[in-house]
Image (cartoon, rainbow, N blue to C red):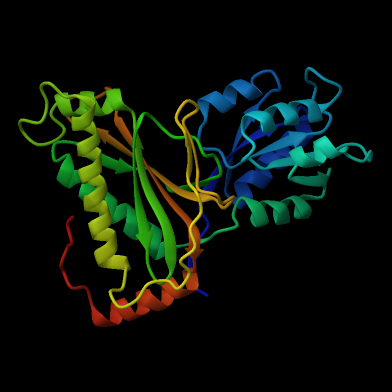
Length: 321
């Protein structure tokens, strides 16, 4: 088994019992969950503010506009059905059919081991080799610095998401295929922020002026190609590819900024902040990177490849497309 890293994930924590709030907050810290404490009143608004969640922890007896917390659970599920909901049971009544479709996991109050097992099985169902994650951050930062030489590039801590909401208006999508993985890499950013970053001189001299949306698309596309070339050179062996050649439809709903790759598995997410050293306090350009290994994922095979690659040594070459 390869050395894997336990990445963090964000969850909404909806509970009104002070003792349970403390218990669950401590639990979240212990397993790598970043708990966003919210009330029933602002729960739905929080979904609009946070597009990169991994789940919801909800008390059955949570006061809300309904007989119990199940009413709130159904409202959350209607808006974001991809988010698993973990219901803290405070009664023994059986859930009806509609409620069972809404609730992914139930756990009795006080049984933290059952909650832990459900979280591990659902939110952290995929583990990522630590060397791979750090390598992705390093090569992406290098590519961003090449494309935006006048910007300061900072990578936030990688985390996993279950949300399928796109960040911003400009996105790129490129397939990734190797002996140990098959899926996609995405870059996402806000069009206005990218335009302002280029106008303020983050990129090469002369890039600016009259920028239309095609220019911005091309800039993000070239950045994607540069990252992909570095990834291919470092992590994809030339001799063979994965045997599984199945495909699944990719669903994109532009009106709701939603994309689905046909898999409930968590996605690896890394946010990069690009700022101008001369303009301290200005809003940074945020580029969100996601890896979706929805077709094939084998960290054990990655470990075997990495060991072989280490023995043979790097070539020092970089493929650009």
